Length: 232
Image (cartoon, rainbow, N blue to C red; front, side, top):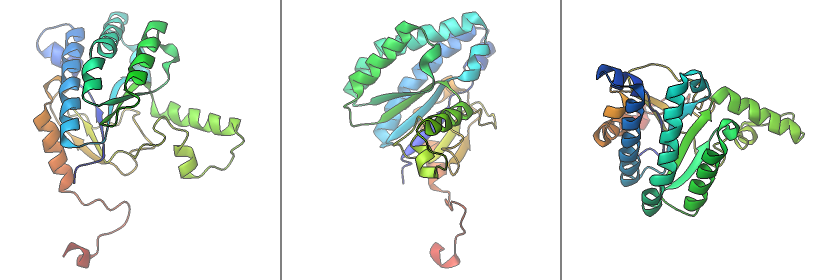
């Protein structure tokens, strides 16, 4: 069975560039090319939701020139690639606190989401200035503002950025790192995790298929056990 929701921690752009004695910004540029390929592959495979960790709340600590290059690439992606994504019936949603972005980027984000809001194909979530701990805190603040003092899991989920979406079935991380990095901490409680050594710019559609095949071999128990008779 194809996973309904796949989340990816796209890691390794800087290391990819460093291995080639190139500026880190060039690695991010190659990473954007990989995003295009993986979005197209996910859509073709029948994945319903794809969530990409593009920029974390901690990424603001990076050198100013690198952040500037990332913002330039983000503007390029939102303005130049939107036509192709719209044609492929992809629906874009941005997850995260957008307050720190410049006004022009906020406008580009709004335009991209509005342009694709009626599309019925792959739901592409782009996590920007995203941090899972902050997301949960914001959810609690919003619930308290509405007088909700004893929320259920379902109620809390409805206040998260991912409200209305299924939790990820599969979490993929590139670059061989075994960390969650403050990504979808609530939502990945029962996700299957797949780590690949490849750096993000080298990740291919075939690698995505391999990850899905690995996922299909697993038995998801959700805290339960598999009875012997159920294996027959």
